[in-house]
Length: 119
Image (cartoon, rainbow, N blue to C red; front, top):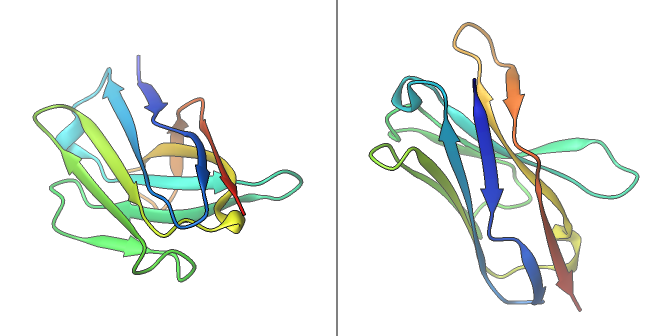
């Protein structure tokens, strides 16, 4: 079965960096685009970044452009989110998702990892 397991979250001061990882299993990883989303308390889950199946194309939310970088290692079945210059408003639970092949949706999600940025 499809499994996505995020890791790398934690508490960091504003201006700091974190790298999130999402280990995938149960499907042919290099056939699927992957994405990162985040959900702050009391808010909806928001798009952060996505990457194409081979890693050639990336898309970012305006709020993280220039600070976050999504990447993937298909040999390790892992997608990453490098987060630099973190701000308190980046505080959220971060989720990775597997992008559906036939539409723009995401049908599989990990359990999430908490990122807290202190001011």
